[in-house]
Length: 334
Ligand code: HEC
Ligand SMILES: [Cu+2]
Image (cartoon, rainbow, N blue to C red; front, side, top):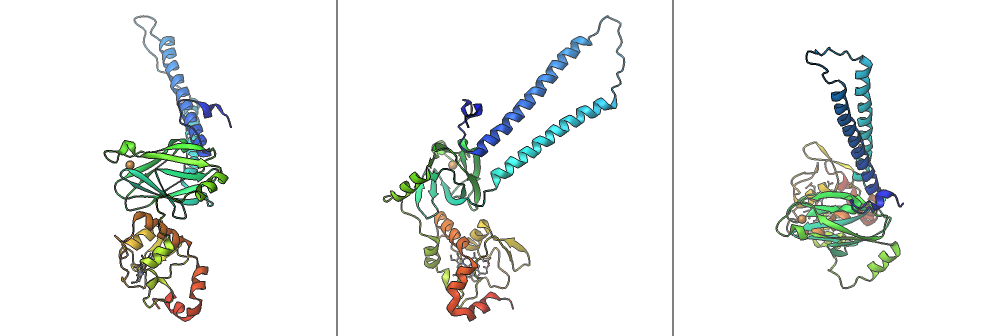
């Protein structure tokens, strides 16, 4: 793994496979453009001298280049550029698509700090401990202005926006501490808004988790919030109000009152909770109260995490004693 590019001093450290892939692509593009720039510069000088005017009354004669020459210098660059495009697209999709085994962590940006949450609601400020070799997906939002989450050693950067979620993923393959920056000017103390990603051996990560007792208070779990905010008074199969069963909706399409269909993703769940009237589910009344002002961004992340964890099986289990009401709740329109 000790390639020359791993020690090249002008570049930030590389701690993910993606970082190496991005750098390879970058160096290839740089090398290729340098090669052709040089070639063209040399030829310009060479031709200028080789075909210079020899005596005063010399008249230039038109040159007829064969078609094969035109074709050659069009097709070769075309093939090279299409190759670069395909390579770039491959790396881009890898960078954008989290692998299916990625574990989700949460990030909330705020003037001027990064609030991190582990899947179990454990919190950290300006620091995130993660196990090495594990794919990590970050679901991120901001409490105020636009920030940007940038870890040079991982070659990942993503804007963090108020009012919606963006994601980013990485898999660190080297234990160590890597700098985190805010890469979007966000106010007076923007330049201090940073932190570190601490990559540990899985064993050390477990020990670190176990040793955390006097830390910033953990965020309430989504399940606690679901009861505390009285979501369960409507969204249980046993409840009197007719509301959609939330189990198993994540990742599927849902039909809305206006006839359109939307994909249930994190941003849809967020909007459904904060602004229930914006997208009304077909066959239901607009009776759901907004949770705006009752949940923090950090709690909202846990609530969404809980909704995503609800499977049709858990619904059946909790609804077992009330099978008849569930049947009627499931077909609201009919
Ligand atoms: C007063 C009853 C009521 C309460 C309380 C309530 N909801 Fe709803 N909810 C509804 C109804 C009715 C709908 C369907 C109409 C709509 O889309 O607004 C709905 C829709 C939703 C949807 C979209 C479901 C889908 O299939 O697309 C989500 C997600 C949701 N609620 C989550 C919550 C959460 C989380 C809470 C607690 C913070 C909550 N609800 C509290 C009645 C309620
Ligand atoms: Cu910032």
